[in-house]
Length: 102
Image 1 (cartoon, one colour):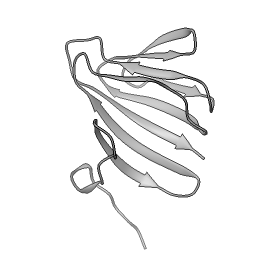
Image 2 (cartoon, one colour):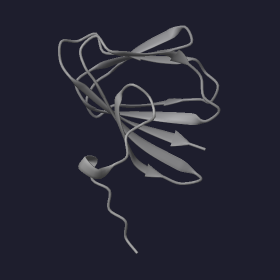
Image 3 (tube, one colour):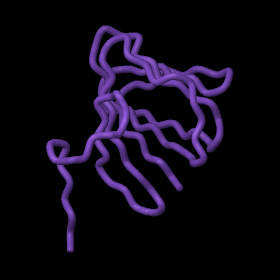
Image 4 (spheres, one colour):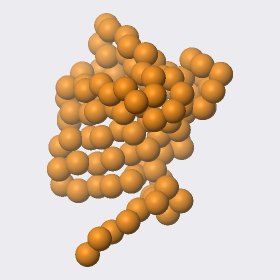
């Protein structure tokens, strides 16, 4: 059976962000996040690897002591347990697909 999830019917993330869980399984989870201008996800670590795929706008990604600007159609991998933060320093909406690899 094919299970189609659209943005409109995807479950929301359980924290205070505009995030939708597009897919989840025991091995991977895909989350679509929208960050408004000035919005950020504070520094934190996770017990799994993460791949960020920038869909729209720009986000600053800080990993440990390094920083990179995510622009549309760019991807970056972050190893598990590394501290990371996302910041929308632009004046525009930014959308990113977060792929969690368990």
